[in-house]
Image 1 (cartoon, helix red, strand yellow):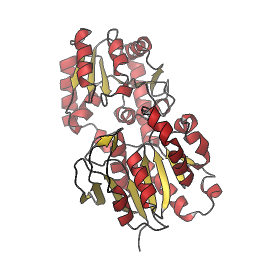
Image 2 (cartoon, helix red, strand yellow; image 1 turned 90 degrees about the horizontal axis):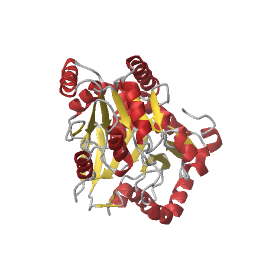
Image 3 (spheres, one colour; image 1 turned 180 degrees about the vertical axis):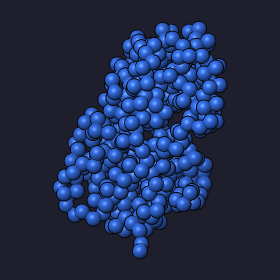
Image 4 (cartoon, helix red, strand yellow; image 1 turned 30 degrees about the vertical axis):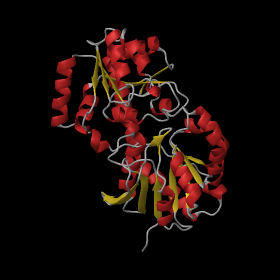
Length: 387
């Protein structure tokens, strides 16, 4: 019996890093036995490669570079057309990705269109205005729009207009990746011996919307040590701020960290912080990773899924955006209240288990696919929200 085909039209794919890439890889691995999944993404090199990655067929299309954070892949429409989609195929377009959008417009595949809306276009405001008309047409064409949280549907100027098509399917994580073990515990103990009690952890790219400058301002008042795990275009700027602010004995950078070492950092820390200050931080997958390790979260009150994932007073604390004083107060409060840290951390792990595991997220995607493929009436199709 033939299986329904799902064409995943994304930006990059594993082993390339990133929240969107990790999410796509994990869900494809979970769904590969139930659907014929074809992944079509950009390569990091100027040639095309087709390969099987853990049972999933992946085509990485020749990439000539990037413009406005989008890969330039002139042959992407050709490869999409070559997949020979039919009306019973689902094309799942991961947005934002203008190149994939352009490829869809040129190839005009016959399948049903599902758009997974990871984030609005936030930084490129002029581009967004020029692009807006075509984007609205794409949303009009969609059979279903997947949003990562109800907050993003509420606050996105694009999704607000198409709320009747939107279904919430959040990001999920593979809990096995974050399980404790004797090796992880040993590495975590070593980290605690190196940095002492009161470790505050940040994990993420050193990029404009992460709020790292606010965190470094707060660091002057935060007790204990702060570990910044990641890398990105702002690394040199962050290093200079640390040096000029005389924070070299308090704030420590770690980049090139392997997966096992990353998990040990999660288990070693006392508090996890996500001080993001732009709506480009649409969900905050790292919050789930820390919550899976039973750590309390301190995040910001963005109009995105960030404060929906981390519930104030339940799994952590939510502070105003770009407010170094409030951020420092929240961190110090949790560092000095062990019982509250434990309560919030336990609640966070429970919330992940109940809502954000890969099997649960994959099941919601299955329901979406079944409805899109087999339900004629859109009114019936979205009468019942899936989350």
